[in-house]
Image (tube, one colour):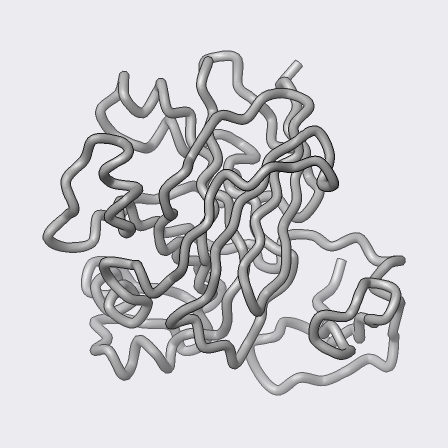
Length: 256
């Protein structure tokens, strides 16, 4: 396993893209190893394994409304464990404890060096390394039963990330889309929103969280989901697409 840089024209298919291997991690001066492969021949893992995933709830007004919740006066944050992280095309495994597992397509922020601690907006912006797609998979019935989020959102495989980290992207107004179906070709659109509709924008979220806990390089912040969350069933494929980044697709299977 190693990090790499995806090379090629934006929007090109996998057959036209290559992956250039880098020496070490991406949080410093990039040094290439001179090893390159066609993207189609590479298995993509989660682009980062964070020490923690910090999530933001109810950051789109329509999503808060669809679950019968008020818009929060300040960011509502919670954690997903690093053991919930999987990569593109890895399976989301439905736990036996839940009868209602749902998708939540989200823009994910990857923190770069030196991290963020008690950061103002400007420092929060500088702490952003890049962005990727995320799916904040949630056992909705357990969330309602528990009255809090840890069990419902913490199962293994409940945090797909990928397909890669996009850097230098303006995410002030990009489309966030989720499609679900038996195959990617037959998937229906479930969620369709834009980041301009976030209640709290990305620098505000990073600054707020950094006044609660130190964000380390490689940590991931999930920024909330637009309206349209819905159930996932064994046999489904769920696809998160974010404008300017790409798509994250995962099959859904029963645990056993």
